[in-house]
Amino acid sequence: MGFKADIITLFPDLFPGPLGASIIGRGLDKGLWSLTATGLRDFATSKHKDVDDTPSGGGPGMVLRPDILGRAIDAISPQNDPRPRLLMSPRGKPFTQKKAHQLASGPGLVLICGRFEGVDQRIIEARNLTEISVGDYVLAGGEVAAMTILEAIVRLIPGVLGSSASSHEESHENSLLEYPQYTRPQNFEGLEVPPVLTSGDHKKIKQWRQAQSEAITAKIRPDLLSKKTD
Ligand code: SAH
Image 1 (cartoon, rainbow, N blue to C red):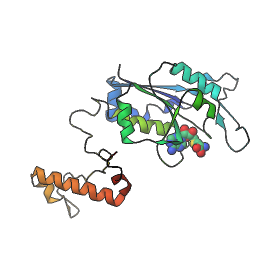
Image 2 (tube, rainbow, N blue to C red; image 1 turned 45 degrees about the vertical axis):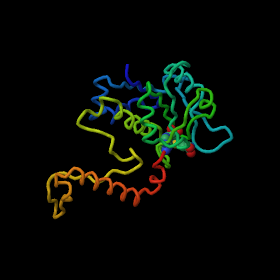
Image 3 (cartoon, rainbow, N blue to C red; image 1 turned 120 degrees about the horizontal axis):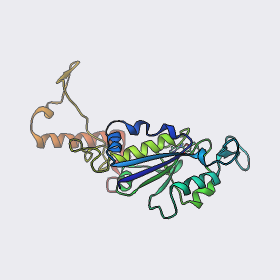
Image 4 (cartoon, helix red, strand yellow; image 1 turned 30 degrees about the horizontal axis):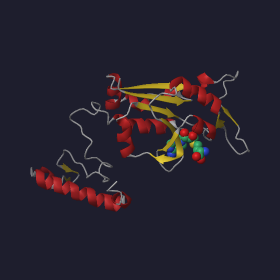
């Protein structure tokens, strides 16, 4: 079975895109998760396959029609589908690493990508969509947001990252940013790898990394430290 992702989009050809590369793509090939992108235009009925119309009350841009979105959602995610239905939206609750963990342990997701001015409000209520945002800025469409959310989730699915890699000490796990990483060469343009890291003293290395994490977080994202007990 595994984690099943469905995307509803005006641009299904954009998928899997980056989700087909590297470890995330290998997980897809191995069947650890699955992805289907469905084109919204397939559900349009007019001669010109219109999916949008002008905003009620006036104003710029176009709005995606609820009837067409409704048909697409019903075809892909029937009423008894246990998967959350997420609408990509700058108005949504911010997506976080914590949310990624929650969703990675579930059956999958239905991700709906907006375009233009967004979607008719009634489809959000009628199909129980949860609005979710990837940050406080405005994208041109929901596709890159959907990819972002899926990529963060899929790497947490058991087996995807593999045994050599691990995620437990990374940024945003424990509400701390990651300590600085180094590799060879020992000397790069006169800059040395911190000697503690080549000392072989694992206890000291651990302490150094913890102190670095705390200092970097305090400097760059002090807001995260107050969330530490979440
Ligand atoms: N008029 C809307 C913005 C529309 S942007 C507003 O002011 O709220 C077009 C589409 O891009 C949205 O429907 C949404 O699906 C997607 N999008 C834009 N910014 C996003 C963000 N920060 N997070 C998630 N999706 C976003």
